[in-house]
Length: 268
Ligand SMILES: C[S@@+](CC[C@H](N)C(=O)[O-])C[C@H]1O[C@@H](n2cnc3c(N)ncnc32)[C@H](O)[C@@H]1O
Image (cartoon, rainbow, N blue to C red; front, top):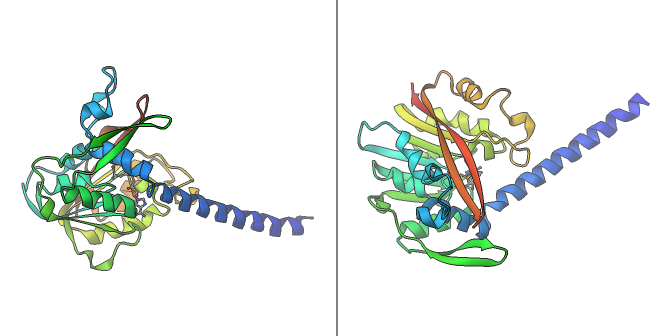
C-alpha cells in the first residue's frame, strides 16, 4: 500500500508545482492589463483629490512613489547613476532624475514600460479612472515638476535575471517588488554587483507574501526584515528602516491601504 502512495504523492506534488507556475504566469500577466496600467497611472501621477476625494481618507498615504525616493541620503546632492527596478509606470524613476545624471527604470511589464515612456516623452496621456461597474471618468496626466526626463531610460527586464551589462549604480531603488517575484533571492543576490561601494539601496516591501506570486519555498523563513538582513549580510549595512503607507484606488469607494516597510542600506 505504502509503495503505491509514494508515486501518487510525487504526481500530486508535480501537478501542484505546475499549478503554482500557471498561477504565477497569470499573476504577472495582470501587470500587462489596461486596468492595472490605468490604476498605476493614477497611483503614480494622479492629483491628490483625483485619487482620494474623501475628507476622512488617509491623506498621508498619498505620494508613495515620491516618498520612497526621499529615503536616499541628501548628500551627495547629485550622483552619477541610479536604477529603479520594478518601476511600473515610472514615477519613482523620474523622481530619481532630480538627483542623478542618468537613471534607468526597469520593469517586467511591457505595458507599464510603454506607459512610462509616454509619460517621459511628455505625451500627457489621457486615461480612465474606474468609478464603479462600467462607469469611468477621463483624466489627463501631466508630467511632475522639477524632473529631468532626458536623463531617464525605461526598459523591460526581469529583476531575477537583469542584463549583465547594466553596470554599477550609486543608488538602487526597488519598491514593492521583492514579494512579487517568484524567486526574490535571485534579485537580492545580484544587488552587491549593482550597487557601487558606498552607494545606497532603498528596498520597500509591504511583506505581502502570496503563493500566487512566490512559491512558499521561496518565502522568508522568518520576518522579512530579518531575512533581508541575512540575505544582504556582508555586502550591505542596514542604515535605517521606516514605514510608508500607500493608497491604491480601485473604485470611487474602494481603496487598498497598505504599509510598506522601507529599508535603507549602504554598500560596504
Ligand atoms: C506592486 S508593483 C510596484 C510598482 C512600483 N515600484 C510602485 O511602488 O508603485 C510591482 C511591480 O513589479 C513588476 N515586476 C513583477 N515581476 C517583475 C520581474 N520579475 N522583474 C521586474 N519587474 C517585475 C510589476 O510589473 C510591477 O510593476
